[in-house]
Image 1: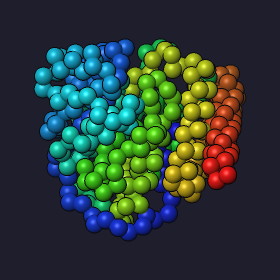
Image 2: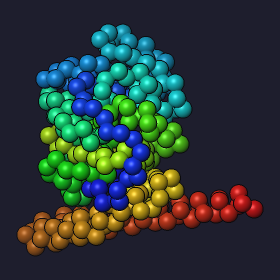
Image 3: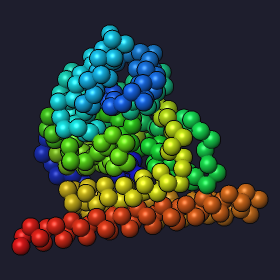
Image 4: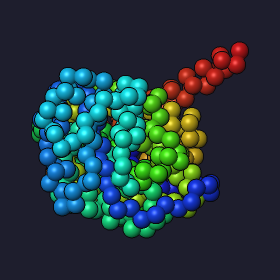
Length: 333
């Protein structure tokens, strides 16, 4: 789970409020030829924007052949080799360092932005206390969606899920596939933590959560918004609609949240997740029961996956926290 309503305490006042945003740089990070068609679709979607971004950047994550092919295929795009540690965080930081726009947006290499995506993102920066804006991530299913897959767990495949605000709202952090921040926020807060985030097909993540918490703490009275009108379509491949992937992703989320808790504190890292467990998941169970009562027997399977998903995530979180405590004790002798 990545994007959650903001219920954390007020950030400590440090940095001054930024000026209104007018220009946009978009960073797409890629690492494999397996997604080449998706990368091409992502770049094409950015070319078709009603508000054309002033700068398009494609960062190759330690894949020289991919970089060469991108430079040949996209002459209007600034194609760069990642200069950071291998992984998504290092690639994103490379893009940030090369960006020139007032706002730096990130679009996944397997996502395609709607034509008004850039305009919608920039419109949400009209208030100068807004330091970041995320958009809606809609699934583009490459295989039939399993009937057992609950709406509340669409974050497993990197998409917006049941329980998120449906209108422009303050959130703690955006979904990484569709997010943006003012460029000067990176100057003040630093970049994404290279010890976190995806590495190849690894299902770990939450680097955007840690960064968002850190950035908000550094800007007095700042807000990060969800603008559902800024939509992208995120590819959900056949390998991601299996129960095995669902379980791996839940475990990875639990481990990642434990790392965020260690860096940002449990209050900021988990307060919104607690609300998700208290409110959103019980509603999902009730929806499943209603579906069963109406003859949709797959509602029982969705209830089962909700229970299994939260159990796996929670168990992985607790296990990782225990390991972190034991490591600290061992380090102290």
